[in-house]
Image (cartoon, rainbow, N blue to C red; front, side, top):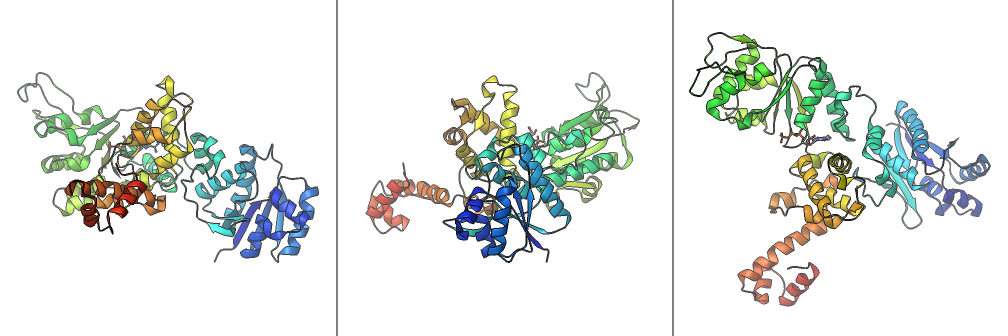
Length: 493
Ligand SMILES: Nc1ncnc2c1ncn2[C@@H]1O[C@H](COP(=O)(O)OP(=O)(O)OP(=O)(O)O)[C@@H](O)[C@H]1O
């Protein structure tokens, strides 16, 4: 088992505990009394004249060996210098391959924010906190930290956040606009960058609006084909009788209405990249023709007698599970293996721990470039919590349009919880959405219960023509008084 190392700032309460000699009140001493660590590292921004007697006192309270480092900060709330100091120590711990345990409680809120951001985004640390009321405890902090928990965190803009969480592995500017602090997406960006340099076909799978085209463009821009065209095509939108002409072009007179030679997407993308979105929707006969193009790099325009060579890199994308489509007989296995060499599976937004609020801020900032009314607009902490509680089946596109709608009614500096609520479309609930929520993102069980109650009580009342006793009976409630209580409690309309 790796060694457990606790790291913490020394806070005012700790220093005072030493003077008044009440160890249980102070976060560091009470954490050391309740948990065992192999190493304890304390960072101190107070003068040594204060820290030295404290360390002496602390050593008397515990059998742990304490290492203390003086860190000079511009101020105890200056993100930049706190970040530098914290990152320096955490990266050296990471090199020595220990389990990093961060004690959050001591220090300023800015220090806590940096701990959480670095501990979650970069160093996979576990977190501890200690308070007079609760004592010392290990805490599980979901990445989507409720904004109230660390108020200063919301002051960090998305660029700073991304900077914090990026390990600097991505070198190509082409990937800069894929905003994320989620380890899975970061890894996918790294893989995409590797694929960009190779000439292999790529298949990107993900729900709608998860960024498939964004990735495809970034790969093209990071590849040696960057100066040649990137052509994006939606295969789901082809009228089946025109597919050949659309993809491979046609000669004048090839069919009624073909009044001139016309290039298809393959010719237009020659030398560059052809992005075939909704690839899983292609008809089987088109799949056969595509397979041939991919195998032989030649196309035959409709009405032509000669083949033409094309040099096109293919990136395909689909929301479908193609293995299932192959199994069900809708998709050719040979074509699948042709295109699925480099495979990127993009997770939906609801599974991208850490990305939702980051993206919301970035999208708002982006929209403000086109809409002066949005300049400087922020998202309130409560609004962020509502955003976090949603499923976002339409992914980033849906998040963007909801923010835009919310901002229309917002006349404050920050978009409020109410603005967001009004902008959200009521989605019909079904059992799946009620029972299949992603618990790792945190759920609001009260809300789920309220939704159920507000859904069924009006139905029961309608069914019993407003007779509350009958409605209560239908709902399995004791009597009409219980029903009345529920109606009040859950504000049933
Ligand atoms: N990580 C991200 N950072 C910033 N913007 C993103 C990110 N992912 C997606 N977007 C934005 O979300 C929108 C939808 O992305 P994109 O069109 O790439 O999704 P898609 O998966 O190709 O969707 P579809 O399958 O519906 O075509 C775009 O405006 C894109 O710029």
